[in-house]
Image (cartoon, rainbow, N blue to C red; front, side, top):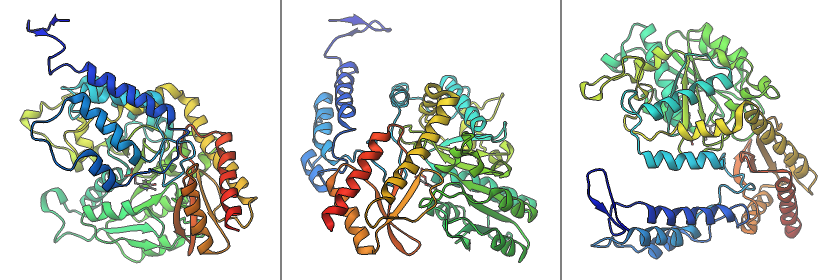
Length: 471
Ligand SMILES: *Cc1c(COP(=O)(O)O)cnc(C)c1O
């Protein structure tokens, strides 16, 4: 079969520029994977060395046929794939993938838009602007906030804290963009004892050094009285990082009180809400986030609770000017927008994929009520899981289950570790071994849209089976 393309060249099946054969192959492989992913054993059966040698260690000299490359990729890598989309995968904090979000992600790669500039890629910038406005609206955060799409909450923390560093130094009469950090006033970087490690990393990128650590209570929430003591012990610029959603307990800091104390001292308040910020999108759970809208910046993920593919982090800064002061850049060759700030002026990257598009697709298929049902459903499944596990012989639930996280422990650490190992070998359920409040724990994060009551029941049964086998 031949046809003519736009410049009159004949295109036939041998044309190396044809995409359809290799894409058809990939679609078939993807469908097969997705058909089986809910039922296959969750842990990978092959390790890194095995996959490497199956693929072939040497780069070929002349290259291979595209279809053969894709076939080989699927055949040799699949044994090394962790079934993270499984509805009984509860490891770390990891969402699955909504069908429309995955399909939109394919289109993002297909269109291959460098999503830096409004004038250049209006289609995907329009989609991302809508997604950003919808997210702020769903979460009840200020309209007109600067919303940027980054790789994940780690970079979203970096963005919020960057805007904060710039602003608090400016208020102290120091222009960090011009003069750098050395010789300037010290920025106090203040966190709770149970913040996520990515907050420390962001502080490191920003030259803030190690944080001043405030005690946490029994659920991991920052102790506001201690925060007040530390803030009032010294004057000067400060960035305070609070948390919506503790990894182990799911707990939320007392934003009303903590933000008031921090703002009283002139500090910038950033909230790491990688998965927890979404509690603010539903009336049933919104009490957990009470007062959080008064913060100055927020970090969250699309790829966790919202179940879009990697990578999708969202950085929201209340003052669009503040984030622009930190990341704004103009260059003659970029054709800057006259009608609004460009997407790259709210994030660290210049070239990037249109990672807000799958988020738009997920939100569009869910609608406002669907978002509420998603978040309420995750929390309800977590509560059901916790009460089912609590019935099992020797199991103790260590946290107050207020959101999506469940931490269980056996009467002694050795037994908890053994249950975790057996459960992983069993393959039906995956939970994260961790350590919390001086105990070994098994942590379940209920973050997958596809988890239902039958999965919860099967999970409890699997843990029960493992415990019985160890007795
Ligand atoms: C996952 C997580 C992060 C880091 O997010 P990434 O998307 O992995 O960069 C930060 N904070 C909390 C509370 C998290 O759960």
